[in-house]
Image (tube, rainbow, N blue to C red; front, side):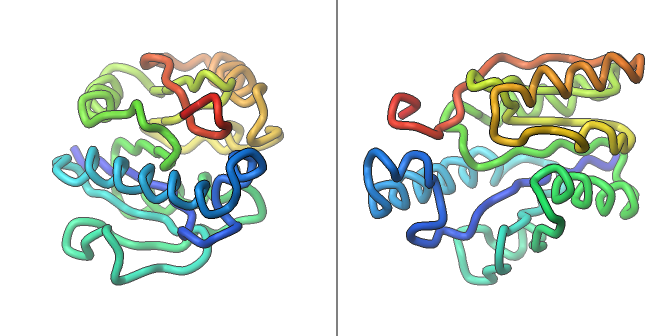
Length: 190
């Protein structure tokens, strides 16, 4: 069983990360928060015994906290978040992975046990989804590619989870819902 964890990150550039949060606390503090989120995401994924791929928003950084011997590095490609996630999943399945999960780098509450549970649940379910309190999701896992999950979504809105679950139900597939966690997007999320 080949398992892949995709980690979507933004390059930590002043003024380009946590922009909704920055409206309240400023760009410098928002960058500081994002760097802590990146470190947390790194720490909870570092020792997982699955293949790990970091997908950067803008440029691949060979000399950052994601060690090149533990994390494969790629650049996101696509017009919107849905297309970028679809392309990453598509590449993973083309490379022969059987179970693939994707996470972002916005969730202080995620831990390695939750990620391990997601891969475990994929053995008996077609999908795994980790609902975020803001109406999106912090994790999505699947055993085969279903493009519809990434199409016709208003990304970064409170409709994403509901629309994704509707797509899964329309496919007639089994899914496991993980614990609801909080993504950090606004001051109240910290």
